Length: 313
Image 1 (cartoon, helix red, strand yellow):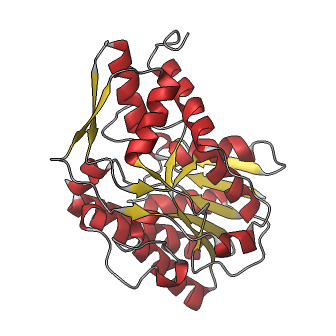
Image 2 (spheres, rainbow, N blue to C red; image 1 turned 90 degrees about the horizontal axis):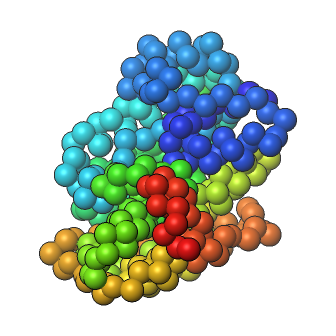
């Protein structure tokens, strides 16, 4: 098969390309650095006509950390919805038999729940802190459903917990939350700081997923002969508070300073743990990366990217 990875040089895209490179498929990774801007419909259509993919992984998005998104709601919702519309319109025009696989962020769930179950996904509103990005992902699902109804375009949609791991940006304001904390704590250790500030109270609980787990599950999704237009959680149904994860990061880095929580920063939703019942029906035997082991691997990656290879010796 010919597989097109949109956002192929980004966080999810790079990990996915690495996993797929060990298969018999032809992999084409494209993003804006290659001249493909999904905001431009005509350009997107031309690229899809030329490539003629059998599968499209939609890893392209305009996103950043919580504070980045909350300061740019208008831009975030505009760019992401336009990219999704152009993706499906170009697919319908150029390669209507292609399978599209979408990661949908768990921030598209309602703001408050004990366990986030797929059947309740659209029942209540998205949390205000991520209102633009979360709703853009809900719209992506609705677009996929409409194009399936009229044009028969097949989509697998998956709801993704908070992701972390190697391959993300080194800008702590734009990376995924846990990676941003790792970057900042490595730098605090290098600078000999005795305190480390954490944005928020540290109380919110998050389920985390290591980026290579997302990539491996997306690879396995190629073989699924199921109707997954309505999304399925990629879930372990296990979470850690921000404080607990910060303490594990400090352990991995060897940071001995005090963890100080900045309560003047917003927390976001208080708890996000995804129900795993449907996941286990689709992927019954999958074993996820251990959370602390994933943190250690991510610390090693960012040490190399930040040029501090001897930090943990």
